[in-house]
Image (cartoon, rainbow, N blue to C red; front, side, top):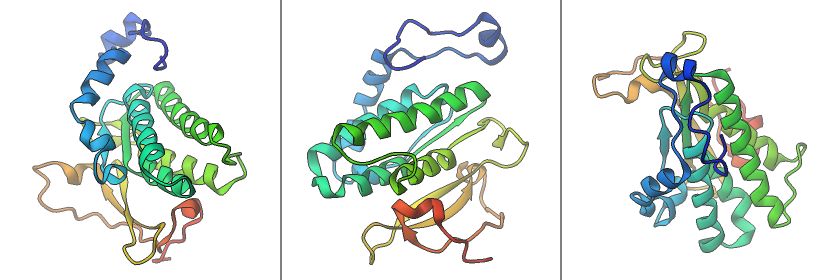
Length: 213
């Protein structure tokens, strides 16, 4: 299902029975996002983080991305749109259990991002840093796993990353990995050992270098 198709609320009875899979129609998605509109287009909106724990094929994720990109267009000077749109992607997280939904969600997120830039005449082809960085952020932030167990499809702990702006270097991001489990209230200590990454421009995040190697 895409945001254009509001009629396909289930893919099959078997999936509903096995996974409780029922898609949220677009008008309900928009109504729910209206409740947090300040976080989507208010002060500091670019870096306000969102996590969709049952992402499906991305209807909430795409709606969040679309609203944030619209706010970028309205409030930020055009020269910074490529940079800030990547920080928007870095702020959106999702977990989806089913493989086909997961692939659809990632593909639709990237298509929405590319469409935004193509409409404004910004080069975003597969060989550009903008495209590759966007694809990398989406692949890293939208994961296939089980929110209830906190594990990915391989049976390993779901791992995300914070993408923090470097306060001294505009456009530079610092990546800090963490486990999804560490976000839970009952998790008092996060003892996982994480990879460390050197700061890099966000449009080169797909080329970032580990600093602990």
